[in-house]
Amino acid sequence: MQIPGDNLVLGRGNPFTLLVAQSDAGTASGNLFWDDGDSIDSIETKTYNYMEFSLTNF
Image (cartoon, rainbow, N blue to C red; front, side):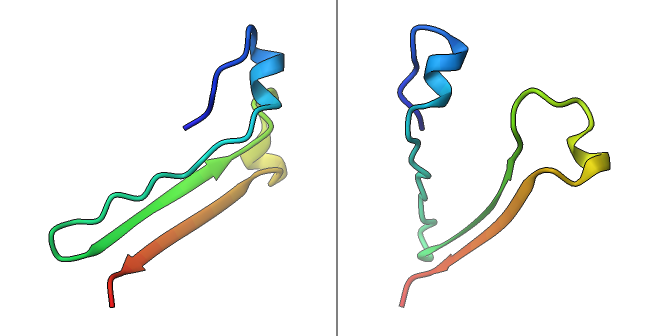
């Protein structure tokens, strides 16, 4: 979740929060693909971040 800016450039400077919603079993999983938002070849040039998340309620 991110607070929008008046335009795309200003919005990019705002912090964001990753919200995790647990299942009834107390687990959650997901992934995040994060690139610069401008480049069209971020996969080919490997200029991105890819993260996988896993949560288990103890």
